[in-house]
Length: 199
Image 1 (cartoon, rainbow, N blue to C red):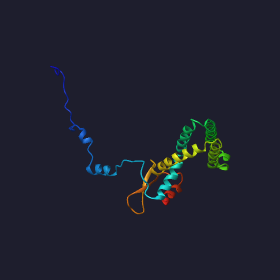
Image 2 (tube, one colour):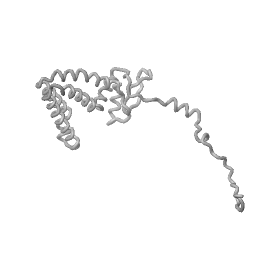
Image 3 (cartoon, rainbow, N blue to C red):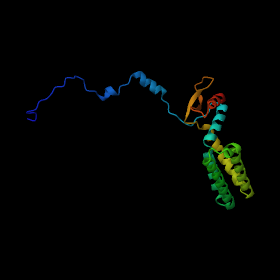
Image 4 (cartoon, helix red, strand yellow):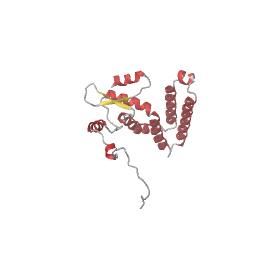
């Protein structure tokens, strides 16, 4: 009774309805190739040679230098809290001076004096030496030595074992299948050559 008085058109095209199984079908070769090339990236591995370990340490010192410094600073800060108030105040002052210098570098990126004439690595080393001398003069040298002895090995282990995310495997000359990681895009054309020569 519902269809009374209505006409139905019969469709002239005879296309079979598509199913989800047909749409998701992939050839066996493509699936096998995908699973063969699929690897889970683990950022922590042991370098194959001592040269590769040296390259990795230098690269991680540049990439994670701020985090390593903060790690050492936090440990030193905690060790100075209980009994060395003057040393703690001097440490905070030197941290403030260092932060102001870094902000000054960021505020004037095109300054010839700050970036070309004055080497920022020399200034940072000078600030680190001044901080160490102040801590020694305020009788906190033991705290500094204990902090460095406990934190530097942790930093070095991390720098040796951490492989960068933006990297690809360069095969060893021995062809053993193991390789060292090097950046996909260098800052200039010679960086990739330097990494491959070092490995």
